[in-house]
Image (cartoon, rainbow, N blue to C red; front, top):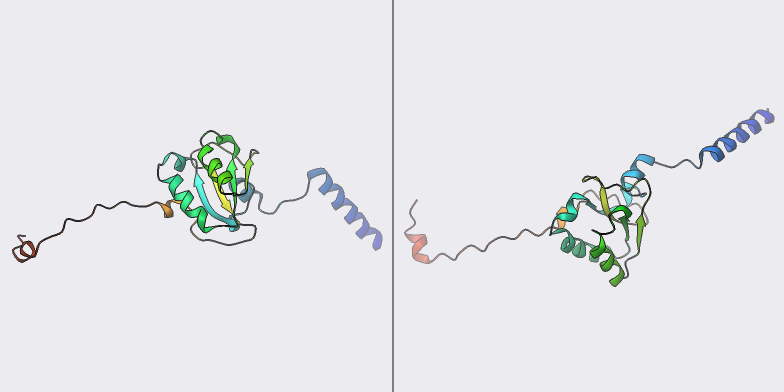
Length: 150
């Protein structure tokens, strides 16, 4: 009986050495630059990098997540320069991810702020931090309210 279990253990060890250590959720790790969705605090897609509201929104959001780590898509180094400068100026730990999980497709991840533990934040998109500028309404006088035409 013990010989059978030793053979199974030996077989599983050989298999793991040949194929490598199995990863938890490999598809999710490819999508989130090697991290897991449950650790993501903030996500910026490649398409959102061209939006002028993204950098100010990122700076505002990054101040809320002091213990976060920044993961940057290594295939977008030129467009991520302002984010790299912000990270170095504000002592934000960052990693350039340049493996198979990095992509230049418009829906791919450009950068992530991630926690070291699971946070399960429901809304991780940068657009929640975009400021919408509204024009102030002109003040109406008392008489214009009194004699309002429909």
